[in-house]
Length: 90
Image 1 (tube, one colour):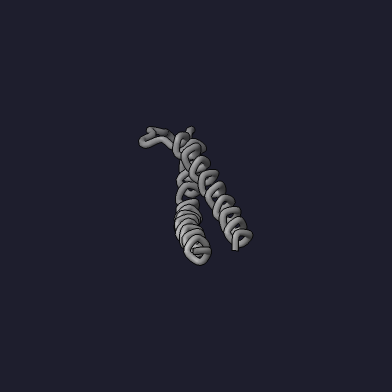
Image 2 (cartoon, rainbow, N blue to C red):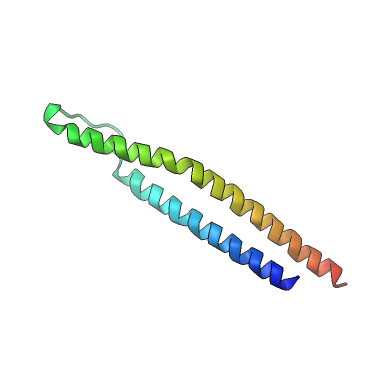
């Protein structure tokens, strides 16, 4: 049972590290996003860059939500397995 718990904790750790990496990447992208920009026709490339940033941030929403749910679920499963192992050894 302890080896299964170790594997569960490793999987939880990998999922959580991936989640943190995506959160940091989204934060980096959001720091480059401007709330309001005033541009003319000569600066259309700036508007296109802002649209690309917004699209990337929006696309990250789904994977971040899925990883957060998976991380929370795995943490609950790890806690339950740890309690089960402790109670069954009594």
